[in-house]
Image (cartoon, rainbow, N blue to C red; front, top):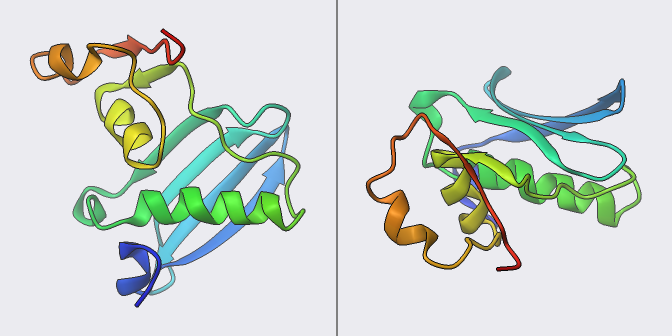
Length: 124
């Protein structure tokens, strides 16, 4: 069995570096289905996305883990780091791959508008 759900669906991961960014791509059957873009100087995630039909299947987690492996093996200068500015979905993705939610965030996110960007303070 694979390390994450993406393995179960045959996803492959590639990466490139350009213009100060690392770009990780997920593909299924040769088609891009997800991307993770982060800065190559501090690792802050700028954007992540997975095609709607492939969400909740481990594709995002697979890209995150692939980027961490690239860093551990010296192929990229930094590992991805969660941004302090996240969308509603981004908050829960960050938590799913090991990022912390600030105190009491989970309660208010339940009723928060899903299109709102929230500010996270992980050290609170």
